[in-house]
Image (tube, rainbow, N blue to C red):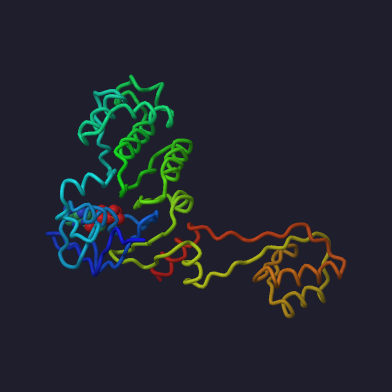
Length: 304
Ligand code: ADP
């Protein structure tokens, strides 16, 4: 595996003195799908512009393929597919014409466009002008436009924002369907659900600094978030049994019919104990800690 994006103590201060990035150290390896999340103003767009070489760092390093990003050659730039808030579509051209235009810009054959249009359900709309499409359809076309040139590095700023659930799912599926070998994807998103579904690694940016970085599981471990198992029971439970549950198994009881136990090994013992004491166990399930839960926790802790 090789390092595709490398940053070291990356700082960006704008002319008016705004410190958008305050020392970022983040590497992205080939094959990763990394999701950069964070509140508004955290520095996500600034970071993307630095990776794309559209901005120059104030200090520190930002390299793509081991070269300062703002010095990449035309050939190297053509291997980067990017989608920023500006979708890069011509509103008066049709869906098909837009894709033909992009293929020609990249000096590519145009005969594979049909395949893309059919695969992503845009075939019926190919003769429609972009301005006649819904915002969701335009975004889908913009994603297809990026993929059409088969870039090895894909960078997208908020690819799923403001989309209806179906188109959102389609866009996530499109990115997920890309072959992983030789491709690296870097996205920013407000939508934590999408990031959770799509990304192999997540970095949380806040006030110009990365405060958490890793897979969802690694982040949970780092933050010391335990996996609770929820045991649902029915019927009456007497005080002696209740006390044993808390004292003997270190589990917590809620509302008289839900028990939270630390892990599956401990839960097995709890369930056995309950059954032996004639209590009905209705359901046993792992409590899911979503990226949204983590995000809320980290941002809240950071503010306290
Ligand atoms: P995000 O994408 O996470 O919302 P941005 O990178 O857009 O964050 O912005 C980070 C910070 O830099 C914000 O405080 C924003 O107001 C500021 N900023 C962004 N662009 C400029 C600019 N061109 N000049 C001055 N400040 C800017």
